[in-house]
Image 1: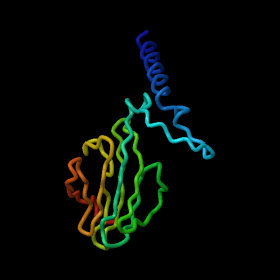
Image 2 (image 1 turned 60 degrees about the vertical axis):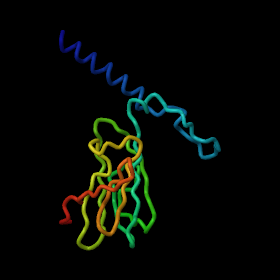
Image 3 (image 1 turned 90 degrees about the horizontal axis):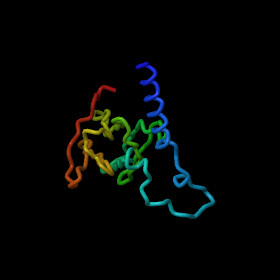
Image 4 (image 1 turned 180 degrees about the horizontal axis):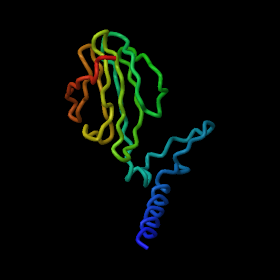
Length: 152
């Protein structure tokens, strides 16, 4: 009897989660429509917030990079000076999003573009410079992050 009750609870939880994970009709957009997207928060946004990751090249040269975001093409890209790239992460169950960056021939590796421990609420801002990868805190101050595993 206890197993049956656990199964029912799990099924109920999955059904409840599916309500929030299925895209609502207000979030879909038509290419022929000129309506602006709604700025209203949907119910699922309260439970599973979206965080924007923004990476800017503040170096003096192109920086090859690659991120494991499902919203970006998974190949290697080149970020030109003063150019930035942004993508959204849905904060469900402590997601981790990494990015690989090659700042120069000797300084390259992986950094966590989004991790719960960073404390990003709406946006995670990163600045890639000649001397390293910097996380820009809420107050705008840069915090250097060592690139993991420079032995690629």
